[in-house]
Length: 177
Image (cartoon, rainbow, N blue to C red; front, side, top):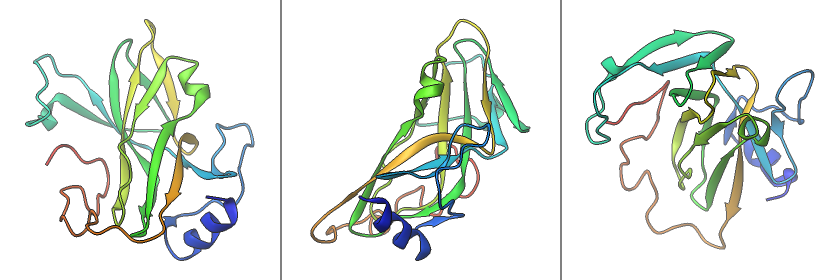
């Protein structure tokens, strides 16, 4: 999707707040790009501190420590949960695929971000992993990943909202529900 379309949809409420240009003053860039949008990391983190096996069907919030700050250090081979500053409201005829930024990847930091399905709304909860054998830092208020928007010729038959998806209207960092 060209930046003109993204800009128009963002002004209709698809991305809030929306950063018009690709902003880079001494930061990891963020905002509108040619065919996507570089989203930013909020100051809210959940740092994994657990010692028991993790069960994706039954996560324990007690395995995580809340942390807030302008940067967050991830332990070697560890991970944290974060979220975007932006709230997304994906139109019924759009799917967004998200990727981590290459500058972070070159430092051993990877993101897992599920696709943003048609009519999904909320903050994106991010799993941020440090694959390096040393601590690594991520920065809030700066770019962490990019959403690429794919358009269809017609709206989907069953959207995330229609399915009453469990992560609809996510606010803050959301664990498994």
